[in-house]
Image (cartoon, rainbow, N blue to C red; front, side, top):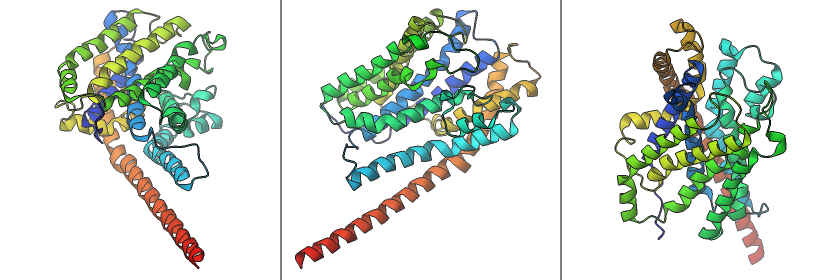
Length: 391
């Protein structure tokens, strides 16, 4: 059974708030030394599994919207404009707030150090994961945005390859795409641990295909869920959350602690745990969208600010330690966590209000104006051709 998807799912906006909070928890745990030892500590470290939640959200929202938008025919003006419009909107969504964050951190935050010009440029252009020494203090977490940008770039190609095929073929192709992640670390050149500052194959885009695929599959299932099934899924959400917590515990118990480079089999298993974690949190809300808790005003606000929260939290975390007089890896995890939230949320709200949302609206308005101009020009040319033909 196919039903028309709801254009906007506010529960997923609230889920973004949860995901950005989880990312802050894992970075605070690492920097306060609470990522090793007890099971709880190791679970705090594994709240980095909210990265796959973000990737799955991107996969879900973009696949449901753009699956059938593109074609191979680049000679068709309408198709070229569709592709170009997709990229313009993606850049407008990501880059303005990102560039402001990178610029401010590089200029004003001591944690950035004294980077070389090529390190700064790699961060400006979101290619830091492909450049040795490209990850800079206060900006290290932005490797995931570099991965996101790679996904945005290839999505039209993926859509052209199988986005308009039958539902069954699409699902099989998505599963095949996901399998790339589980073989990636076994490539001989990627098996050994990288040296300090060297390229890390574990943060290259193919390693995360399975996490984006969770979103693709959720989008494919969305229109095939009956109202009765939606009600059942909504009632079972506590079980999905319990399963997600169980995945944190399993992942925390399996493989090296902390930031130790995982062996290929360990990395594949961790990728699987992250896949299941993301699926347990995304699918219950993508397939059965309403949630009073996630749709509350505070969760919606935090969801709107979540991208800016993500951008700024590491630089704010770097300020917390000197402000509190606490050294790195010396504990006080709860205090550092609260202080990081207190510093980050107002900065993120300001970034959203002053940079992120105005820039997105301006770029979208500019693009609509360009489309109108092109459409008017095309219509005028067609009218002129019709007039000449009729004569």
